[in-house]
Image 1 (cartoon, rainbow, N blue to C red):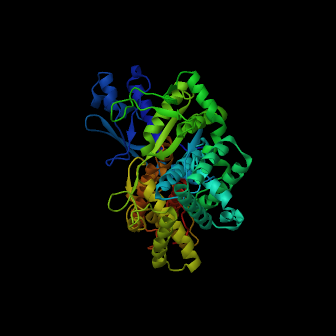
Image 2 (cartoon, rainbow, N blue to C red):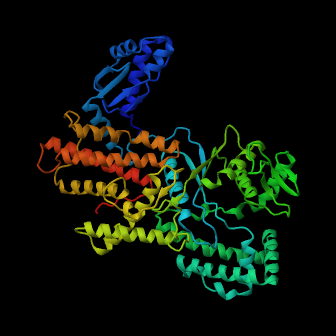
Image 3 (cartoon, rainbow, N blue to C red):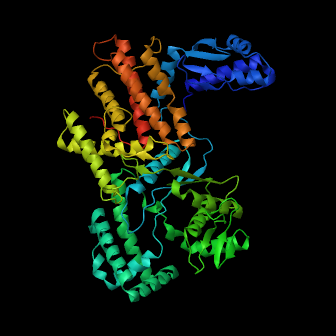
Amino acid sequence: MASVTSLSDSVHQRLAAALSAALPQAGSADPLLRRSDRADFQANGILALAKKEKANPRELATQVVSRVESGELIKDVEVSGPGFLNITITDRAITETLAARFADDTGRLGVPQAQQPGTTVIDYAQPNVAKEMHVGHLRSAVIGDSVMRLLEFTGENVVRRHHIGDWGTQFGMLIQYLEEHPHELDHDADEVSGEEAMSNLDRLYKAARKLFDADEEFKTRARRRVVDLQAGDPQTLAMWQKFVDESKIYFFSVFEKLDMEIRDADIVGESGYNDMLAETCRLLEESGVAVRSEGALCVFFDDIKGPDGNPVPLIVQKSDGGYGYAATDLSAIRDRVFAIKANTLLYVVDARQSLHFKMVFETARRAGWLNEDVEAVQLAFGTVLGKDGKPFKTREGETVRLVDLLDEAIDRASAVVREKAQDLSEEEIAERGTQVGIGAVKYADLSTSANRDYKFDLDQMVSLNGDTSVYLQYAYARIQSILRKAGASRPVAHPELELHEAERALGLHADSFAATVAEAATEYAPHKMTAYLYQLASLFTTFYDKCPVIKPEPPKDVAENRLFLCEVTARTLHQGMALLGIRTPERL
């Protein structure tokens, strides 16, 4: 189905035409519409235009009003203040526009797709091989997953990349230990659970580290093994692959609990760019972008200095010939720009790495790999804090395991569902508890602007009141209950009906879904979608309180129109929550 022109766009077109008629010498003019407490929309661009044209703003506003084509779209336009226009939409226009969205059986609600989409590589959800995922891994995964969904929904070609930590010196230690103690991972990887897999790796890592620190001969053998790994020794690579496969079992189990799809083909870790590192260094050195300094290959920046006032370089290759993160990240940029042909490189990475990525991006620009046609953006996110406002830790001061955190959220949510459940079986309570608990964790993260820290408070997250996913999920479930109880009455739009104030507010907000999707996708801002959905659920609560749908029974056409508003709201909630990666259970 074709996209549906929103009410704001329709009004914008009418006002722009009226402005051009009132001031033909100004050419096309933008009335700058916004929502207003005093009217459905307010045009506030007239002041700037009047100033530019040296005209009286109120007189210009009056001229525009006289030229506005109203009809079935605009009910009333009035001049207010120094030259604002307050616009009221007709009830018919609200209902007919929603009916067009309702008729879209694709589930898109008339939301348009990009006519000329670009290609975005989004780098998110980056755990480390042989290490447990902790609370610090939560935000990259949750924010990245939602941004990916928003971009794909708007029609962008999205390539997912999970840049896992699967290379480096620690693997020499692990591989050497495993060769000397082969029984430590003596099992079929397909026969163990994710938790068992990571438990095995954790035990192996601790034993290897203990031996590495205590035995100089083992340390020497381990370091020699790093050289073998980087040189591509087949036996060493085979043992390294064991660690990767074992870790993936664990990764997939955690992401499955997070209700996220992580595809194996999209996991391209540090090792995936190993064959490009030498060439990346050669290209940078030959072009003069990087220079040798005390044996290391470095890139210097005039505006980046350390505490001592001296320039802080980006070290691409160490003095001993080894490669650091910079070489890998620069090689990844080359691959994403020249092999994948991406227009945008989006990195969902902790704000604490901002300096690193600033230097990497500037280096790539100097090399010509990034330019006017290809941009790299770090979607930097803040820290997860405890209730005390400090980085979230256990009582013992250790980093919180992500699995433990998710399990506790599910337990808390299951208790809330059980308390409210009337006709759910224990199996259904467990299923809903998981959906509500995981949704609560995701929503709390996404409802905060990514670059801000946020407090992890499970009591608040699973609350039925306030700005939580549980509140939205219960609003959706309530609508489904209403539709089930409606009996023979079906959702039918009746444009001829006069709308209650609560119906108008709900309808106008539902119509702005497409604009919100576009804004959230363009700005990589899932928090704008959460804010929209929370207001939608709040407006539905007011509508439900003010406008009887089933009891006391309204006239047939009124009941059908209100069921229609319920259905549109439910579909919007469902699709909006899906863009956040959150389930909407039919019953709660």
